[in-house]
Length: 175
Picture (spheres, rainbow, N blue to C red):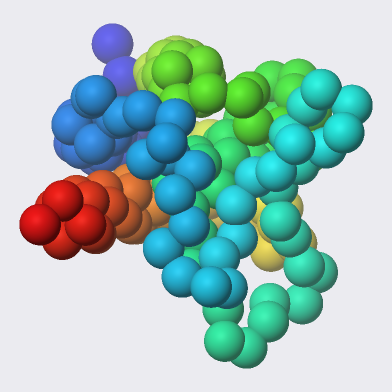
């Protein structure tokens, strides 16, 4: 049985997961890779049979519009790092997009399950006393865990917005 504060984090995760599932339902590769603007960040074949995400160490101005595939990769990057830094779960330093909307959705759902398992084992004392460094920011474990859920929710909302734009763009082209 999770502690009260871990239960709150699990509840927040359940809400974010429902939103994730809603926006991943029926997602296809063409929609996933659609570039909504001339300056989009996406994932591209790397020439060796894999996929590489567009990335810059310093965020460009203006910030490129991400594709859904890039956002899915970004969620994977965040969660893999958070699982490693917060709970010691092994994972790659730089995950790669698995090559399809279906495979990426399965990867994100596996990360949800791993995160849920880790949160279920967190004690309130750990939330108060443990410190972690996530993406260069040292912070209490409680703050890092909450931050990951907020970041997931933000990225999932962006996926939803891009799906709406894709549908509107497809409808206008069909006229």
